[in-house]
Image 1 (cartoon, rainbow, N blue to C red):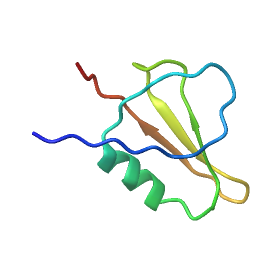
Image 2 (cartoon, helix red, strand yellow):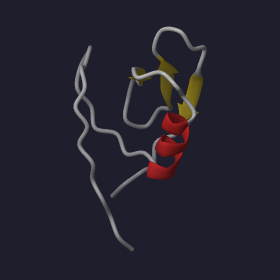
Image 3 (tube, rainbow, N blue to C red):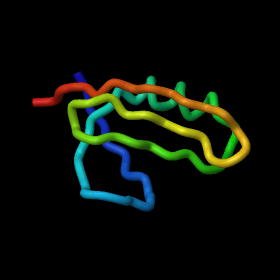
Length: 69
């Protein structure tokens, strides 16, 4: 089994957390939105995260975190 890590630049509001997500689900969500700006909201590493599109598009995509050991 392999592993990968990707670091993406972003602006953060609130406290910093580390969250693990299935990369294919993240890509599916990001490929479905047409705006250049996407917001990711979550409250803890083991609660679902929500992708929201920037201005001009009504888009909401829920993604569940994965547990890593």
